Structures are given as C-alpha cells and as structure tokens.
Length: 77
Image (cartoon, rainbow, N blue to C red; front, side, top):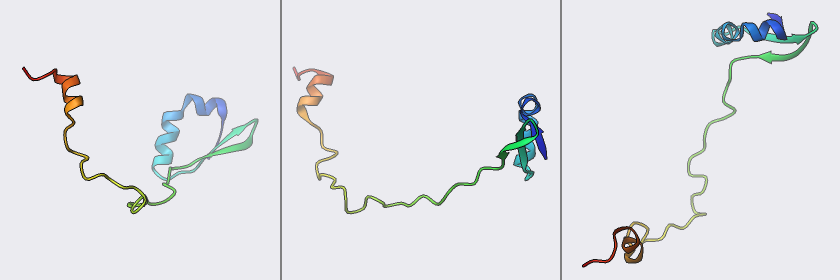
C-alpha cells in the first residue's frame, strides 16, 4: 500500500495496526516513495556475560560502611 504523508498523518493508528498484522505500508511525498512502514524486528539476540572476566567485583561489596551509616542514621548514642 502506498500512502501520501498527509493521509498517513491522519490515519497513523490505522496504518500501524495494518503493519502489526503483516502489511507493508509505503509513505510517499508527491507520490514518490520515501519510507517503508514495517513491523519492527530486533537486530539480534542479547548476549549475556559480555563483561565476564573484564570486571572485578570486590569481596566486600555488600558489607556495610560505618562512615556511610553514620551519615544516614547518625552516630550511635
């Protein structure tokens, strides 16, 4: 389907629904195609563990720091 910009603006929701259901829509300016409106496809799978071996996590990461606790809670009385 080829549709001019002004008509596409007025019917964007309808066009997106058509694309969602598999139809390809071509947006045109003065009847010259300038863009394709197609359903989004992710470019690739997410790769997990990409920083494995490159980041060092300290052993005391979850230990509390007395100085920070005093800033939040005040000194013990």
